[in-house]
Image (cartoon, rainbow, N blue to C red; front, side, top):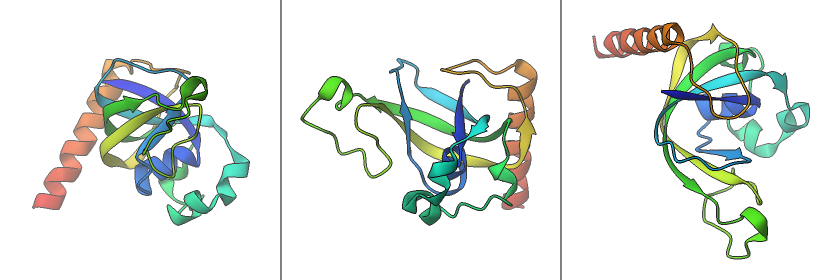
Length: 147
């Protein structure tokens, strides 16, 4: 599993609001499970974004936390069509920013509660203990929903 740190409220929008694209400055060849970590920074201007508001942004929600792992998604694809002034554009949807690499996220699973953790810029590898805690939490949540 790999991880990315995303500023709030964007991380919340991924975890709770159906934001299926993460705008990144670099592409990656990695595909697979991706831990979504809410960084210690908050993009205050984005809190009033119509997209963020439509995603249900609520600063009182536990997944609006900062400095914590809040979800797991599958990194399914990366679109770089608009990077370097590409004029063809892409069909990555309203969350996709021009000039960025669009990391497509699928099967997003919000964690039942945030797990405090240090993040990093760029793609990073979470500690084995953090991965184990996330997997245990998701397994327990799935079992509780099934039973």
